[in-house]
Length: 371
Length: 254
Image (tube, rainbow over the protein chains, first blue to last red):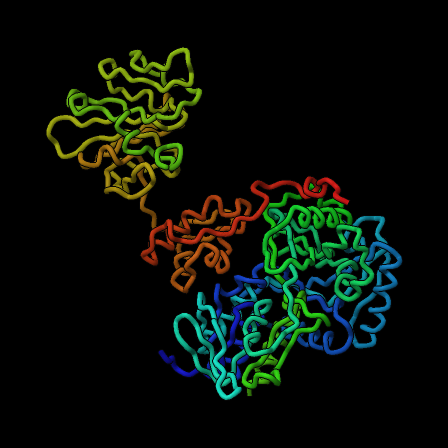
């Protein structure tokens, strides 16, 4: 069976795939998005909603994040969908002076790159985030950090793309790329073939599977993040909060003390209060294959660390835990653009914890590669 | 796996144990005690002024109704905390029977209203007419409602719904309406998880314990599948809410 020819096929309906579909459709391409599950059913439905700039390394990483952050400000109106964007600002908490030194080094470079970020001692940080423990060292503050609802983001992009003529098929697993004379020209699914001029691999942690049969090895590995969800609560946090452990696990894994379980599980605080009042409290960063279960050790380590940073959380009720698989790359940067081995294929995967922050700019850049 | 213990509704075998024989119905109104679970409970015994109901000193025994002593007064209906007692009145050869039942929802129907008679599982059976709504002081807050239903359905109809043009919330925690859920299913959400991703249904405090079956049923209705074939949502710990501090105090394994 041969289906109608599309210009562009996007594989994967997470925040990256739906963003690509939207900007590609906006640029006039005929877009078909395929997801084996559903829009936001994978990693994008199992993560927090941080749009955090101050966790990015100066250079292309921070540049892309800053462009993305600017796009977010008007995105709800543009998509005609409430993605629950909140320009709340963010803090990265330092427990010790050693961590503060690490932050100070990063901040200096970020300030030089034009980011408004500063280091606050704990008394000052507590004036705007009173629930922080008194015995912390302090926090780095960036007013341009924000948050969004990732599920809403993917739904908003998917629906807006459809209004622009894109087709979104859920429950359709791509079995293989179709490669003819060395050029990617479509995909095979159980329900038949789809042909296109370009195929975008936005399959996140599942992206390597798609290209492996053609001898291409992508350095993307699933990294599990376990997150706790609380009951809806009155407003109690004013910012999205990370802790320096997150940056150490991300950029300086050699600094981790592997005899300590918290470090072994890669636990770094990531807390936000969603528009519905519930807190998302994360997270572990573990290599556990494609296992999406929650573990008692992971839940406990996250709870313990959250309570250390925000002692008042001891009394909030946890209603659910979940875990998602972040597409980790060794250099912490996503894999974007064409790859030499497979002309016709555009990569848009490997964002790990930056998928939300980078989704808009990724979609926009990939749409540019398509022209 | 059927019967009250598994489904919350009486199985055919259990109904056989409690429904009155046709000869008794011919003689006049009679109570139907649909109590088939041995639990420690006996207010019905004292409720009957004629001594027709007996539980006895072993309080977990099922109540036994003396069909000859029962006068069909219906006083026991509002005394059963499990709302398990009904009254049937199917005299003569008329086409209708009266089914008297406790009803603890608001708003109450009015006399003469036509309502949707539903069975023990809440499924629609037949349209029924409200004959009486008794909210007298002796009823202690439980309205006893009498429906007139076609005789062939008198053993099925045990409650009713007031047809309402207003919105029904399927997910009460997140206030997601039936209309929104149906819309999501029509837009392609064919599993409980997919409905959740589009509407937030099931993401609230109860984590879908209340709404997931209702959502399955809507998906089944919309897609023509059997409710049992609809994929359930992913279950994740904890089963019941617990404070973060309790989670943080697990044993050290260092």
